[in-house]
Length: 432
Ligand code: CMX
Image: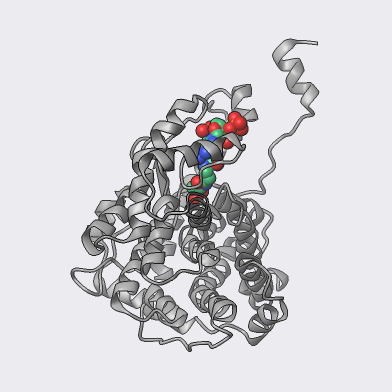
């Protein structure tokens, strides 16, 4: 797989270097002050090859939409969901893998999954009051002791081979994340009654197993979850953070730990769990778990009036219902009959968009991925919602770390945009 990756990515690396040397003066567009002041939206600043986000249509991974991936990627059970290893293969190599290729990658990950003892010690040394994402980020950082890249750099390896050591770190890190996540979960919520990995299971199935939710239904959900959260092009906070930190040639463990501290923010991955937190607040406030649409609308207005966001709704790029939301809704329609949390997610989809739309300033009133995932997890018995963002973090590694190997093989330089004091922008807008 590494050799196939090299053959494909090396061609792109040559293209990257050629464009850099032959077309450096090409103008890509103009930058408006409004873009600078609203989080650099819409400025084409990053090269990311794993996936591309269209505001209307949603995410495509190497050109494939989520429905296409669900149909074409290899599955263990013909009527189940594809295994995420197939998506990792696609993002690295650019082709839909055969069943054998996907299973080979799955086996490769299983052989790399050993977590060093000191990482468990780091987790165990933290108070149980530490948030699961704090434990997760610290655990990832602690594995930097194992970094092949760091050792290769110190040994003076030529920079044209950096990608190889990065690839090794990236695959090891991806392989170990389910074990680390499950360890945090069992420590936090099951009194450290840990469950050993089963190396015969696929990457997502093994996570379900080690968390103690060992049914085929949960494995099927986890496979879907891990695919839809895997990547969202390069500009989102977690992906961009890993890329930025990586541009300093920090090792992949540093890069991904940094990315996870970004994912832990409520405007990004924490929304995965905040949706359920907010729904429970609503249930408590309204004193019913089957509120009317009018009651839900009142509660939404109350949230907005108190200067808070409605989690799971809105997006920095998307302008339509997120296809990752739709994929989960379809999954629920197929497998779940009359569940309170799922019903609430559907009810919110009916009630929230018109309210957000009427506010005026909100560019996208539609749901994002986070509006549904918590309800599904809750239905299948994963009720510990303060853990959900860790699951997001396990999944997001697939895309973000595949991109990091690309960054290294392309020979991407250190990232260093220009900043100015506010007075400079004022001068540009209004003159002196
Ligand atoms: N509820 C209330 N207000 C919202 C809102 C929401 N769901 N979505 C946007 N707004 C507000 C913004 O806070 C902003 O207000 P101010 O002008 O007062 O600062 C205004 O509407 C304009 O924002 P925008 O341009 O539409 O959206 P942004 O690109 O600034 O923000 C996002 C995008 C996702 C942070 C925002 O929609 C949000 O906070 N949503 C809720 C949190 C959430 O679900 N995050 C997860 C996103 C997906 C992910 O990364 O996992």
